[in-house]
Amino acid sequence: MNWQSVSMIYRHEMARFFRTIWQSLASPVLSTVLYFVVFGAAIGGRIESVEGISYAAFIVPGLMMLTVLQQSVSNASFGIYFPKFSGTIYEYLVAPTGWAEVTLGFVGAAASKAILIAAIILVTSFFFVGVHIVHPLWMLAFLTLTATAFALLGFVIGLWAKNFEQLQIVPMMVITPLVFLGGAFYSASMLPPFWEQVAKLNPVLYLVSGFRWSFFGLADVPVGVSLVAVGLMIVVLLAVIRRIFVTGWRLRD
Amino acid sequence: MPPIIEIDHLSKQYAGGTRALDNVSLSIEQGEILALLGPNGAGKTTLISIICGLVVPTGGTVRVGGHDIRTDWRAARKLIGLVPQEIALEPFETVANSVRFTRGLYGEGPDEAYLEQLLRSLALWDKRDAPTRALSGGMKRRVLIAKALSHRPKVLFLDEPTAGVDVHLRREMWTVVSELRASGVTIILTTHYLEEAEEMADRIGVIDKGHLMLVRPTAELMGEFGRKQLTVELDAPLDALPQGWADRGITLSPDGRRLDYDYDARAERTGIGRLLADLNAQGIGVRDVATQQSSLEEVFMSLLENGGEARR
Image 1 (cartoon, rainbow over the protein chains, first blue to last red):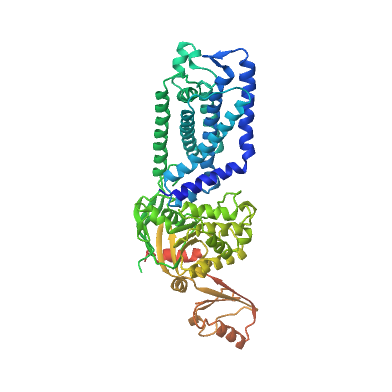
Image 2 (image 1 turned 135 degrees about the vertical axis):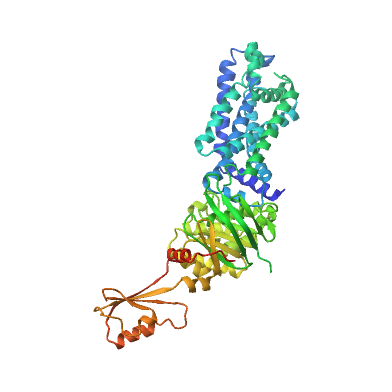
């Protein structure tokens, strides 16, 4: 393992984030405030509580998860796509740096950025609602695993994409609907039985559920199932990335 | 000393069926400059892309410093630096950070003293904090060279280093290459300029349609194929060549207004002085004089006509 190159890729990607720190942070913080205003204040006024928790507090884990998923995917996909677009990808391919180092550098940076933004959203939420975290270490574990899993997904999208349209289409057409239908703003138990079963086909539901459990001790699905789901996603995506690098698909001729 | 690069029966056939390289074998000695000449699409870039790890071969083997590029790729790639044909740089990164980044990718820790020495040698030290997007085309190419040398490689590949650059920059690049050679780096460059290969290379390899047609010392190749021709425009037409001139390789054009003289530019006596003196002695007025060298196309034609074979 070439740790020097992992560190260099990671620091290089983080430097890009810090170069545009205010743009990177302003957008998610503003979105969160708007979600609190719309969902917390306007709709929350009509829904007093969900399973004994105020609606405004109930949506905090979902909002964090929404941002983590979007940021992980977009940061990782853009991170690897930009060198492909600018032609500098050759540097990674001719260096004595394997798929594991490149993946760890890019995915680690994308996940770190997403976690940092999630932390800022959590702090922002304290200005609107009182949130008590029941299992803080599990919250960190779910946050890290989910950010990693979706950064891996973003990395695959970036490797696959041939243009900026393709880079955006998966997050826009797949990730966002899955998050909205994954219980970010409601509990699956609030759905009619048929739709509750349909919702359980959505992998994001397991992530949001596990994450919400770490906050309130309440979950739509067993926590063990959530952990297995996110773990499985990481393993499958790592296998896909390894395959892409070994075969050189869309990287080498 | 064993060759630094050993290429054995290397082939590449793309998915579409195009055979970019066909059974190429070649040895490159440590410290030499080898120029790979050939027209566009000949297979030059494919060859160096395979050695550097950008293209996967469909047959044959390559060893760099004794390390197989597929089974022992980490050790092989540590010895290699690549300057690509296209200028590819992160536009917002500074020159110094860009070079530091490449060094890190090769697993090397920071070495600010070497960075300064490298940037100074390439006249980039004053621009070390400038973003690469603010540099001229020539400077960008030098940044690419600095990046390729950031981990002190033993072999440097320059893919069309002077493609699309002006004469001044081309000369500048030649100077950089000679300085690199002086420092002991083995250099493999691709070009389609015969003049460039002649100026820089110890040996020239000619590739066409994926075949390595020959590899010869530059002086030998230029002596054989790089002949020059002197053209003399006359004031008044001649009815015939003076006696004995035809034996010296001088020909008269059908209209009698032009003399052509093929000569070896490297010979101790080219015969040009004698020809001009003879013209003067015989009272033949000269309107204009010009010389021209065999073009790359003519060299290829000559090779094809001779059924050129790959020779190590």
